[in-house]
Amino acid sequence: MNKYIKLVGFGFFIWLIPFLISLLILPVRNENRVLFESIMPVVVVFVVVVFSLLYFKKLEKNLVQEGIITGIIWFLTSILIDLIMFLTETPWHMSIIDYMMDIGLTYLIILIIPIGSGFLLNKH
Image (tube, rainbow, N blue to C red; front, side):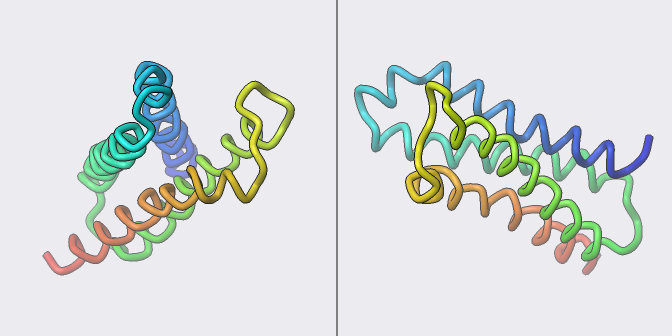
């Protein structure tokens, strides 16, 4: 399988899983926004770590470069899907500023974990 297709596929699931969990715990968001905002980054970290482990387990070279490419592709995949969902006229519509403060900033996790993984794995 082409590595970029795999990366975009993994990126889609990195976006989808937290989105589905956020829908499942939507009542928490409505009743206790602070708790919801604490749960979601933990979910994102867990999902990104799992997919990082899956992706990096077969790699043996260029690990830093792979981490950077992986982080950028996964980050952009999530941002692009969100821009379609949140910036167009949908039930989830919000301004770009609100989006960046509420969701976009959290997505830096998606960029940082694979890059950090590449650096850590490169040492071993």
